[in-house]
Length: 159
Image 1 (tube, rainbow, N blue to C red):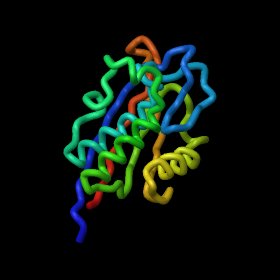
Image 2 (cartoon, rainbow, N blue to C red):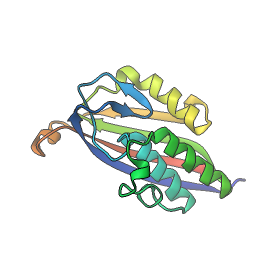
Image 3 (cartoon, one colour):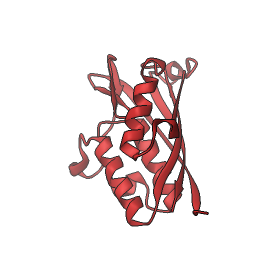
Image 4 (cartoon, rainbow, N blue to C red):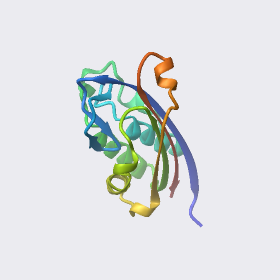
C-alpha cells in the first residue's frame, strides 16, 4: 500500500471593493474580491498549505512571502502549480481534497461544479476527488466590520 499523509490548510481574506473575486481559480461576478498581495485566492492558498503541510514542506508564506514584490498580483493557480511540482520532487502526489468556503460574499453553490472541475484540473485529479462546500458566515463578517472569505481544506497525498 502507498504511504499516505493528510494535510490541513486554512486561509482568510477580507473582501474589498475594486478587486476581482478569484476563488478556487474561478472568477466570480461580485462587487468585492479578496484583498491580498497576490490575487488573494483564499481557496488556492488554503489548498497549497494543506498539500505542503501533508508533505512536510515549508508553508505558503515562507515560499511566496508577501514582502517579496515578485509575488505582487501573482496568479494563485501558478503558485499551486509550483506547490504541486515541489510535491512531485519530494515523491508525493495529490490524492483528494475536501474544501469548505465560508463567505458573506459570492454564493458558492452556482459555481460548485465549475470549482470542482477547475481544482481537479489544477491538481491532476478526477473531479470526483475534489469536493467543494459553500457556507455562510451567518452575519459574523459584519461583526468584524465587513465581509470576508474563510477557507478550510483537508487533503490526502500519496507516494
